[in-house]
Image (cartoon, rainbow over all chains, first blue to last red; front, top):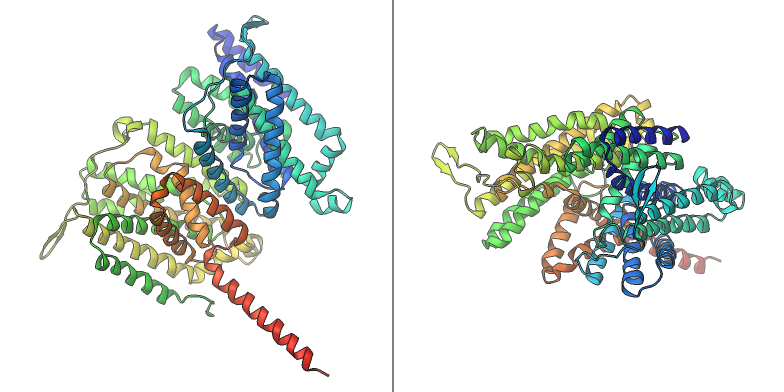
Length: 302
Length: 336
């Protein structure tokens, strides 16, 4: 993982150096948030209900955006409190979705995928009906710029980077060392064996789904001031998250991070030479190319 | 071959054919003819999608091949000066031809990876239609001024296809061809092998089935029929837009197919019909259409995952069990 990170950073440095422009970093940084998104996506995917692909994950991200809009922009709650609130509310919604819907589809990948398409429509349409179709803008929580090693970054984006990195690290440590995190990994490996060892599968999957959705909510709250909040805001990130997960390898946390950085780099470099549509296409072509060479993704396990 | 339970294929096909003739007999209203024509087109799409699902794989790029057929035909007719009737045969073949390499790549993976990679293809093709060769494909504003199907020259004169009714008959004819082929295949050795692959592909492989070739054949044929529907779509709508072949219409096809039941060849027919009628009844609630579709999809998948076609069997099963339970109770009472 460290190797991958170094590689990406060095490539980006070269490009930056060659162009003498630092605007790229802006676009690049958002992919840190996408990386978080990818990570939690994968968590939902693998841990919570074993082989469930939740296409409606972007809608939980959207929910996080709306929580931020109402709490921070409308009622003026402190931004960091809002972030916590988004995590709680969206995490709760995730637990609810698991208990009501996805619990019954454990192990049925295709059915679960189709149901998540239905959930996507239900959540998106409900958001349109209750919040309106228009974009809502959220003011920046922090303003100003910082210089890091000669690079100019807006403070807002720095907050996004730092929080995203902290969340990834926290998640990694949680899964590695916390008892509940270990239980989650055990369930992912072999649910029957985990149950025999006394792991409460129901609770662990609900929690896993909840944590995954909570992180999507956090991503929504982090990015709300950067982009506008709208009912369809979940569509693009969910597509990006899919790319990240396939590229990085389903079931691999470092893979999700690597995939996020790789996509960020490919798109960042791509924008220098191509139109934005071609760059979007490039992401998918990378997916196809990687699946051809490594069907399980870069760091995925069979 | 032993008979399988359920509707006999000949009877079912005859019912569909008669129902299709019945529509113009009942109404000449151009709105309802339009609805019926779209319904038949959707049936070709859902039947072919289900045909691909019969090997256990959900192809999220199915609608893209409809797009390939549509754009190919529009280009052949407007740029190439071809007759509609020639392009009606050639454009679906183009879709099938594109499907071969795409299928070769996508079928290397299976399960969740398969529908993710086909979804990637869906997006790639949509972005391609939207942003590349703008002079030819129309770009974001769409490809316009596609001519209606040309008059069909016959010995006694020519049949024109300007009105709604002749277009309905054209779609009806295309539907009959697609339904005949796909239903026939379902009840043949081919359908049995597909079902074997879906149930346990490793076992099928040990019995000498070349799975990849088989799946590729299914994929290509399914794409051919999607392309056929696309040709009709291009020349009846006369306008093509990349969003016609995006995720939302694709999910709609999945909804149609799955609500009816993807296990049975009649599932997509039932699903497409039921949802078409429902959406007509709920026309007042147009704003809620997507919400309702989403909710219905979720409920059906949770309560009755084999779809609506499995309902009669399940109810009958439940009734017999209840009767047996009763008989058992009576027997217990009589016994010494």
